[in-house]
Image 1 (cartoon, rainbow, N blue to C red):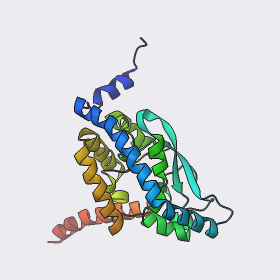
Image 2 (image 1 turned 60 degrees about the vertical axis):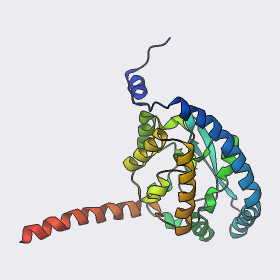
Image 3 (image 1 turned 45 degrees about the vertical axis):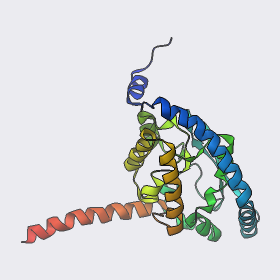
Image 4 (image 1 turned 60 degrees about the horizontal axis):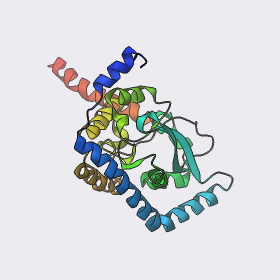
Length: 241
């Protein structure tokens, strides 16, 4: 057998050890995902058709779907499908959270389907293909190297990525990189049928309430500055006494 590199050995040492019960559940989960995704596509087909037509009417020369390479289970790269919500001039192969001014790229209809998460519904096809699960860590763009390495380090890639997950119900776009990895790791550690059911219904509530929706890097910077000001303010008050 070939000798493992020090980095590979270190990664394997940090892997989350799934229990036999969790491993069995992951197999059953695949069957449940397939059934639910198929039923959802049938029920939601009128909505999907209407959205597709609306996108084409708004931008006749643009495609209806946005397809992007993402990292899945066992580091497998697959093509994620979404309804197109941005103009063709938007940067390619980049996470939206890294855009400086995403509002200049998002279409009028795109704003609506992003706020309501309707743009994510075509990923039900990815679930049927076996690329994704309904519940799991959100699949990363390949260029998100830092968080991608951290996920690999902690064994997050042992499970399929999901349309929604623990990080999405714990702050969504307001969660920073390290917190996202912590939530992803926590999900894998406690993966179970009960956990997935709870996350499923929490996700519906989060979407309906439009909680944690932020676009681009500007909002992240604003959040960091606000946090710094909150910390500095008590110090300044104390110094003036």
